[in-house]
Image (cartoon, rainbow, N blue to C red; front, side):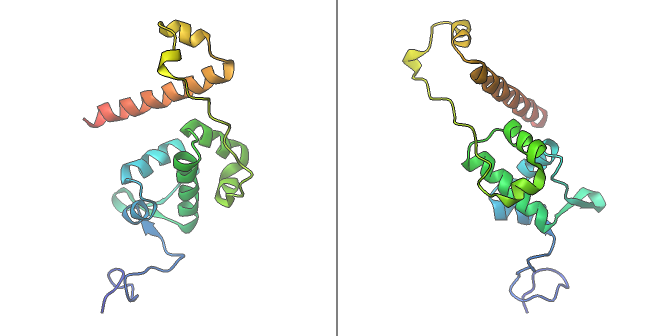
Length: 154
């Protein structure tokens, strides 16, 4: 008899929809590496899996719904980490879980052809609007954080 886990009594390996999931199961379900899920926990305080002995994470169904929405906002709708954080602050985790479509990303800045860029970086910065500068600063912050994370693991 095939089971979903030791002693769970289920056939075919399927868990009940309301069962807790391990980080490996969530990672596979969302097609996101486990280290990304742990990173998101550090960036989004609303993601709080249950932690058991040895720091093992167990995600509730509501956690998975929130993670699925965060993934969609980041990977599909083009939000930045800071943008999703802002949405969570303003609307809370419940608003993200709903995914009503009433939350839309701001329009991305138009792409600039390399030939159109000024010769010096300082000239490029002075030609930006305040909103573009804010977006650029957010991207630089995110890239710096990612660089620091990578340096810590290498």
